[in-house]
Image (cartoon, rainbow, N blue to C red; front, side, top):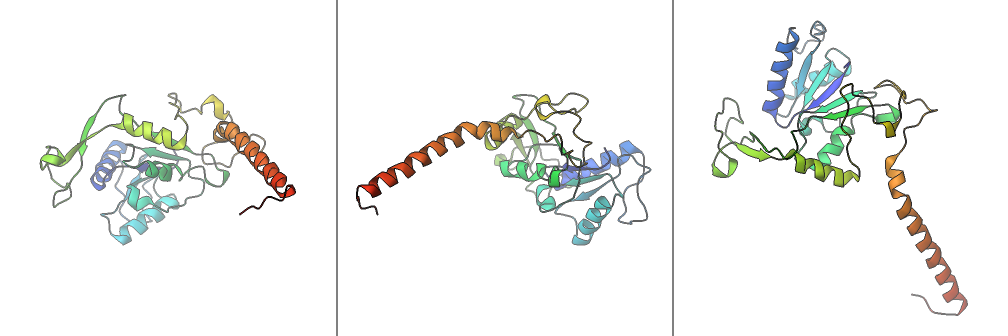
Length: 242
């Protein structure tokens, strides 16, 4: 991936993923200096999260938008309102707690007729995970309390199967499972463009929502036609209409 935003649940998740990618890539950590591009590390990254300083967040966003790092690791709050033209990919490390945040996340790609791919990494079906949900004073740093939140601990049970169901209900569409090569589902067409590039005008991606809404739109049009005729008929027969 040439460029990608990665969404994590918590500030601590962001820091842990940053450490993992830096170590896995074998390069240097981003040091808030534009002269150090980090391109020697194929997983060069920086964090944009609420616990970072304003200067750090501003520098991280600039480093990402100007191409000095490949991956911008974010929380939902910190990433809100970011508009990066031609962003090819986003990855949801976990699904968000709130359905609207999913729509916000995937809205970072596919802007201005550019083709983007939003990838969500999900737990197995009906597999509940115990995840960190820190309420401790140090917000998770060094915390080892694995008890549940309702018993004074810092963890909760997470059900991504249920979260996925709510998201699909909200967008009125199922989210397809990608093949290992990340190819687009057949219904969306093939060979449209490279991710991040502007969609070729001669091959517009079909709008699945339009097809699903057709029956409802036809019904509404018919009802409007009947209502207008009824109004005309009542007017012609001198009925008083309030």
